[in-house]
Image (cartoon, rainbow, N blue to C red):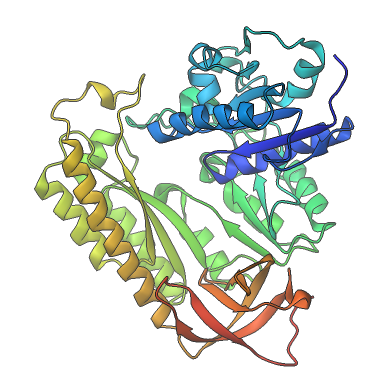
Length: 440
């Protein structure tokens, strides 16, 4: 097959998927392909899927339909978690030409070059136990910040989660190899790196006795990177050493995202989580003791089987009392091949929806309260490289979203900005402190 010249990639799901999509895009570009937008009539579409929720599966089907409408003659490849879990189901979607599993997705260019387009989708998806290799990835060219993949897979098998079945066992490169990738990023114009993975706190599955804290210490010494953020990290793996180090680091931002999932110990045990709410509370207060200005985000699931009104209120009250900054609320959905799908007493869909609304409202209140604490104060804001309705958006060290009037010279720079007001969308409006340049 003669290589086509235009490829478009679309990412569903998490930051880890974004890092992998970007690395796959570079593989195509190294083979002479031009990366284009989804609507630019590409010759090849690559859709990197998620399967955390049922909606992600539906979104994949919608994207295939859209791709074929844009270019009926295009080649469509599906990769990612959904592709590993249900490759034959995806192969039946009209318009799909190739499906690659977890062990095959980084060989996509080779598979593409070897395959003739046919009416029947070609499936290359080994059993998940074959996904043993760790392929380093990072995003570049998509955003002001880069998502650096430091770990893949998970050994935890929470009862609601399909990720271990989609990505395999926990694995990573050595600290030395991971630092080399960070040094590659440091040579670009990227100012901020977000450490991503499936269970990043579990870093240390390679040779030697390395761990995540040692990795954080090593990355802190890499020249050329202004900022790091730690993406989602399990509370039982977020040690006091890590918290204390971040509180003293100039590069690691005072921003943590810590999944809770439930504020009821009964539900946490049913979910097969590796902590109880008392440990979670302990971690949050440790962070606030060391960094009172720190931003703390929380994942929470509503409507898990046998979650009674009392269980939900226990979660709601627990979150309401904690000094957290925002919530990511997930409505439980039944997933095939999980333990939770076999549990009794499913929560009615309308009850799940009502609980979700309550927590979304709580999240908005928490975020606004967090932002209001910093009115009139100045922060270093990394401004992004695209304008939104005459404004540039950016984030403070502690993850407050700020907007300032657009100026070309401000794109992808770190500026000191005084927070003056907060708009109705919970975005802070800032005033640039003139004659101040932290990083251009």
